Image (tube, helix red, strand yellow):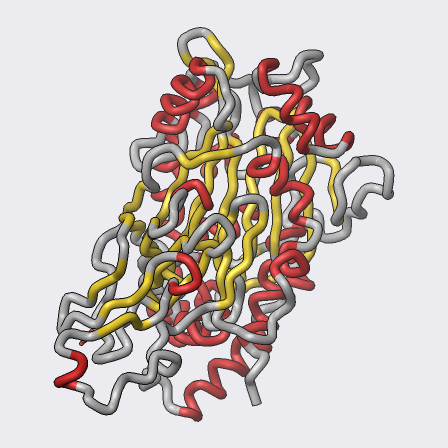
Length: 441
Ligand code: FES
Ligand code: FE
């Protein structure tokens, strides 16, 4: 039952409609932590949108599975065979017990811990009710296998990224990703990628949207929030956060591409042929100049090529994926994956792991800085004063700046010269607001 009565919900919808004005660079602070807003998001955004649930390399064999979360629901991501990947609500059809209680595994069958209903985990039987204990005695009339199939989400895969949605009618995944695909290819499509180990998890005392919009659109904070980089002489001045491009590919997705001006690519030469085979000429050229890339697929799926740093005298970076899983208006469960090219030389794999641990991970230097900001923003917004009165935040950086002309940058979308812009954050909030209000009266 909603915490808000119908009247309260209509008032909230009106407040969102009147005060969320990204077109003017205005976002009210209450949306960062309001419980009613959170409730609408779970229902109208996470109940419908495509959500990242895992990478194919995490479930390599028939019977492999991982358990993940879509919105607030636990789901099983299972592999039937080479071509069959399905996502199910992690709930037994008998009494709703959680079917898979492990984070991952490889099984011949899922057996419910409560009364023992069993479900297929392989081939075409993935998700099918296979049997129940003492079935002929307990159910002499038989069990309707079709009616008792696990509840299945719609599933599609892009370059190894598994996405699922509860909606039957949303556009296909490739349309949803749109122009962001060109940039996603640089991180997950440049070579055959595999997840290293298991995703890390930790909890942030923050609203889930703050880190999502930060990765979509905020290169501006790096010189201040991560000033240790310049103080320790790891990078040179403000340029490390500004040089490159801000990209608003539409759909609420957003990203920044950081470039360097050295002649040689920072990526390992041993992988150049594989990169060239997998990328188009513009993508390959962009990868060759790349020194970092941050982005977010709406609403909460972040991707990152962290700034190259030196480890043991070699310049190294990697590939990182994140989910900012909503766990309440003021709480976020973080999932963090580190990926590497399967065919990479050993030094790149080993030092890349070190880079991941030191920069963006539960022990990462950058995460310490960012978390403090996200937590304090959430706490500021939760103050009684801002719940009552409008406190409008400034999202107007680059409001009047025109994007580059077609041909000035090889990638699609609205591309801005220099990473200091909030264009993608404005689009993020426009899409967010429109989806929240879609069913409003
Ligand atoms: Fe699963 Fe009863 S709840 S068998
Ligand atoms: Fe940061």
